[in-house]
Image (cartoon, rainbow, N blue to C red):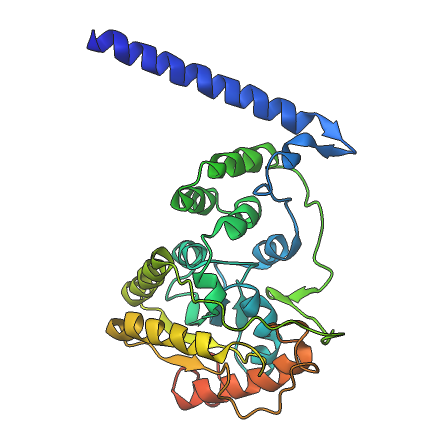
Amino acid sequence: MLTRLLFRSLMLLAVAVVAYVLLFTVLFRVQWSGLPMVHGTSKALKWKGGNSFQKFQEHDPDSSYQVVFLGSSHAYRGYDPGMFTSAGYSAFNLGTSAQSLMNSRVIAETYLTSRNTGLLVLDMYEAAFEIDGLESTADLSQNIPSDRAALRMCLSLRDPRGINMLALRLATRNAPPRYLDSAYVSAGYSLTTDSVKGSVHYVVGRPLAVREDQLKELEKLLRYCREAGIRVVLVNHPYPVRSDRAKHEAFNAIIRERIAPFEVPYLDFAYDHGLPLDDRDHFYDHNHLNQAGVELFNPLLIARLRELGLLDPSGRPG
């Protein structure tokens, strides 16, 4: 009886797998307005291309960088590797759109070692702790070169849509990117010169919704870096004056408690920076710095990292 039940279960599973493959193949091959119909079935299926594709094509894990940046769009738009290079420090930015701490952890475990990373700068924008990683995994599953990293992200997501992401990755393995990021410069950085135009609605008073799973991912990331011998500093770049200061303070209280056992520095420049930043001239929306803001912030960050002994004051290669 048990053998028969097991056999029927395996047959049912085999039929389901075949049916899924056939359906996905049909939806991928059938075009609508010149595009595969499968993309219309779920917002979780992203095109190959853009900033994530370009940076991982450029990034060389065998090269050594004195500074590597990780995090969401605050990271890849707020920390300019070119400015660090000009100050004497080789740098690369591996931040990606909506990158959650789970995604950051998998990227670090896949690409970062003590041999190729002198210092990891992890951006700590609170919104990255309030998301499940679906958007970032949909993006990275198509653009990250490592099959193992893509698989680990999709499994860590614990969402059945991860199967579709992996199927799409397999189907487009040899396809060229669908689009490129016109703002992409080099070393993982996208440069934005626009400033705020018109009125901006700053959301204030919304409850903090930090996810416990993302806090645990932060701990896993810090644990990996400690075991791998990678120095880490947590950083928040400046926020607009009119943004939600109370929410950020509540976030800081949680973060400082969770990182205490790891004894890593946390540099919070959100509101305490002393820079002549203006909400309109130095930001291009309600929370992202533009290049004018970056050019004020990055030298301050470099100086602080030097003061803490995390960067050689002379700017010599590490």
